[in-house]
Length: 503
Image (cartoon, rainbow, N blue to C red; front, side, top):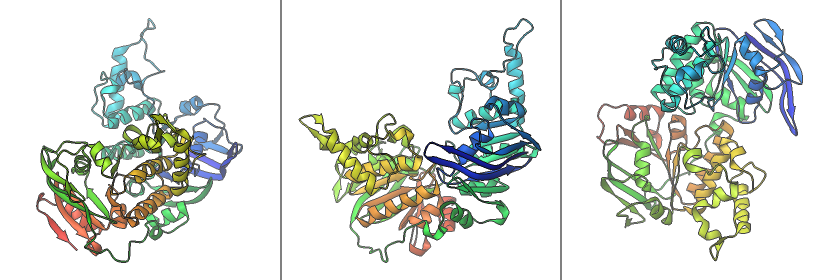
């Protein structure tokens, strides 16, 4: 359906694509993967008519084409749904679906009844039960995504690119998306699926293409390739090298840094307990909605416990608050780095210094020179790819943004660091760097609590694992007992609240 042959494209100082060939067939879901900077976005924009190739050619439905604009590609049936939706929140679902292609009456006015009726027909094709009159601002993120796909269907979509479609949804919403994409595949639509989540590729896609440094590395049927082979092609190292080695031995008598006992948040967490020891990484696992994040937020003081006790270095904290916990050396990196972590309009230096401005101030005035010097030191220590301390975090990749947050909290929180989904939305290469940082912090004596939905991450990094189900601690795992099968068994057990322990 779509073939890009020997595509070359450069930007000032950057070779984005060097002789890349890529094709997607009618009725298939083709995964396009690679680290940030591999060339995925540039290839997508060339396919969609946003950029023109410097060399190479494009064929659509078996015939050569030269897109003159994105509108030209859309008119032929090629659509891209970017990670950031292009929707008007104060307009209705129907109005968004037909924006720019409004249905009119014979008098030239907008035919709202026809617009709603046709919007309902499109949504029905997708298997989505949405009221066309609903305002987009009132929809869930998953339903907004369906509106984006419906916009494409209005134009008789033949090739559909999806850029990180599950970055903002999870659990049941992901399964619903997959069902709708499989239905589109059955209708003959060619789908290009761009994602960092390799488990999704094996669950959904027919073929996979790997790009690295602007070059094509491999294309293969998903059924004939392993996760290890994909990772090796993406980062040039084996999967076994992703996770840094654990310490040769972990003494059971390592000092307890933080102890939470019988923590309860009505309706969300029930009588949950955990212990964090210096120099160890504790994984907090469980299905979406199991109460992992809520437990961590209660420990950090972001949510008020209705019952339970918190002890740090032997000192009982009667009323935990984020300010009190930070003062005691506890930090938290939220799973929502843009909404709850970074100040997106500020630079790297300001983001790193944010929780400890007093340390960079004299007589109440911020010493920017000291702040920049500290930031430059962290940029080097955490291998943050940027042009310096004055770089805006908004222009940085997700992996480097995450490293800015790690640098911020590791600088001031030397007792406990809570990391909620620390590698969400970052490429495999950035994950390796973040894993290295986590293990290095543990080696320095920090107690790390890691919440993750990725089982390989839990198994590959954790010294101990606490598994939650329906707000209860279902059990703990240690040593050789930490396996994906064991975590899943506890996370899906039918007897929440009964603590099991395996070592």
